[in-house]
Image (cartoon, rainbow, N blue to C red):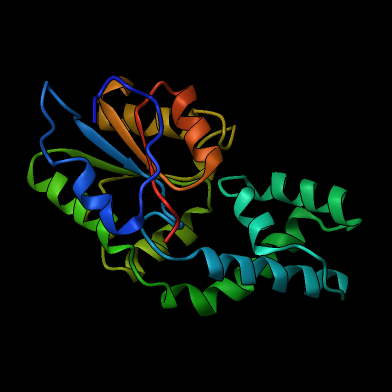
Length: 216
């Protein structure tokens, strides 16, 4: 993969670790910036169930919100997700209800999420080659840190930026640019590893090459 391109590459999850070598040619990348949910840890189904739990608890009813609908909103902030849900499904869900309800579910289930082994292989091989590593996630810090701790990699990523650290969520570039700043690496030399369309948009807005993988 050429370090200068921003064109996404969609690949099967089983090949993720082999696409970008730890020491790419022509100068290569100085940093890898990973999304968390669906990229490093298989948490997407857990987060989906958490949202359904929060909606049932707040409204007392089920809505026709499919798995595909949920995945299409990947990378959005909680506030933006609430806005979309209210508009599309006639809910009166508040951000506080969404946070309380999803937190309630996630506290009991986040530890069940298995790691995305190929992405972790890429991260570990990169670290061994001297590539700096960061996580940039729109989620709350406690959720991201709990997820990284649950898959045993909390010490692998020296920089972790979350939704609390920036004003604008993905698809704005803020998270990736802040991660690059804290790593002290120019954006053009950072490779983003992402599984959501909004994350891809954010990487492109940050002018960073993006490895676009299937959610695990």
